[in-house]
Image 1 (cartoon, one colour):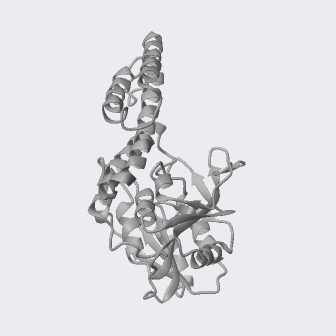
Image 2 (cartoon, one colour; image 1 turned 90 degrees about the vertical axis):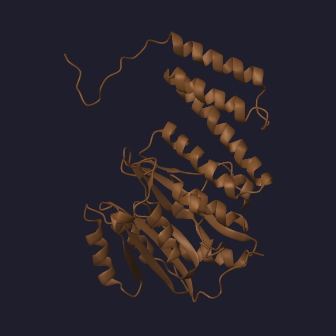
Image 3 (cartoon, helix red, strand yellow; image 1 turned 60 degrees about the horizontal axis):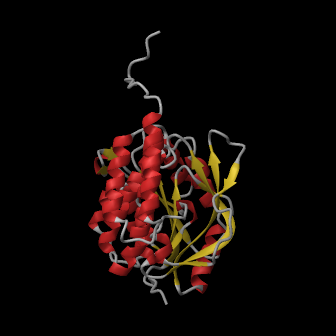
Length: 336
């Protein structure tokens, strides 16, 4: 049985973080305010000092619903930089630290919920599933480049329960679909502030205290747009960030748990080798291949090394034979 936090008198908190989400934030807030529950809940918004009008929109909603909405007005001086780039880590963690509910639901300011019963259903699920530390549901993906499409995230059969071992192979839960029991661990470890993302490490920390439940319903929308942190990144950068987070998470795992994480890291290394080789970046492909052979080849049950070596060499030869693209300074247009 997973230990809860009965000292918290409010049943649930919705942790919504936002930064420069002016075109989307009203829809996100409205999707929370429409929730129909048999218990009290709060909407805690972490507004990260936006410059596009998001802060003013949040202020107007708080003025209308002070009974439901609390806001943490952040300052950009608190922003955590990872790899030289600003992240929403401090906002994400600070917001969760300040929630008052026994359960916490997550939402980003550019996503939204679609079911008015989402919060009630997920809290009910966890109330009846003492073996689960968190739960999630399916979502639709709204791509701003093709708004007519609303693809499902999970299209195949799903299990009712998942384990920490599954999660260590990669995050399969969109942020807007997750509800978890509050305060399953004392506080966030220092290494999380070095991670390029916050949700996957949070789920791993929670999943160390119970199983992951799945509700087979579609109750939210994840929005892909150029301003989104993950959806605006190329695949290679996403893989690099995932590997960086995995390295940090490994410090909080047992040796047995790390085996599953290592298997995931080996898979991501192989994908990076293939992507670099197919793009013609032989130097990067060889660098990641060397890292893969050194770190993972004899630690995971993967394709035999001879086949891997032959596959890699074949890809590198094809890349070497491909026409070389000139290096163009993106700041300068090509001369005609």
